[in-house]
Image (cartoon, rainbow, N blue to C red; front, side, top):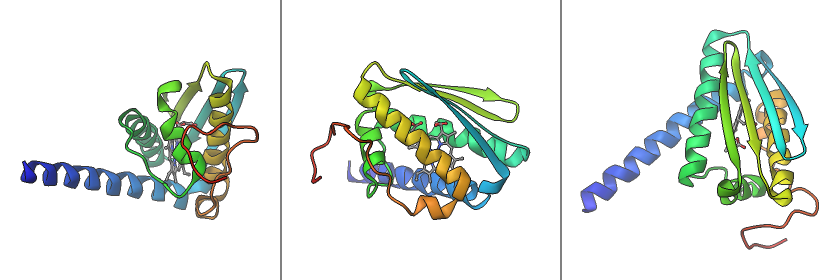
Length: 155
Ligand code: HEM
């Protein structure tokens, strides 16, 4: 039993290290990425692309890996309030990822207007990663104005 738990945590750790290597490459090469976000009444549609085939593969892999982690509650960036909340609200968000020849199109929507605000904020955070790379990634993402937290915590 103990060995099984150890193996499981090793698998999770390896997965996290792999995911981190992928998003670090995206951050390092952010100037080779493009992103356009359309704000919809119930969420967003975001198109993230690159002219570099290796980056196209990594964007596609990252978006799928992150959605998989959302569905498992396998969080990350625990020091960042908006990322903590997006994982806490995963059940209230409908994600759809489509593959494009040069990237991904992501649709994230919710029936809950409170969660829609969070979806906008997360999409802006990802756009700031594309615009500024590591400079943006070191900044915490503020929760949207008027947003009601699902997790308790200090304000
Ligand atoms: C330049 C760097 C990055 C790019 C291009 C990128 C791209 C994307 C894309 C295309 C999605 C799908 C949803 C959407 O398009 O809005 C996504 C989702 C996500 N990304 Fe990234 N990302 C980057 C950096 C990061 C970093 C540094 C983290 C965390 C450490 C992260 C965590 C997440 C999470 C948790 C999701 C799922 C939540 C959601 O889709 O709303 N990303 N990212």
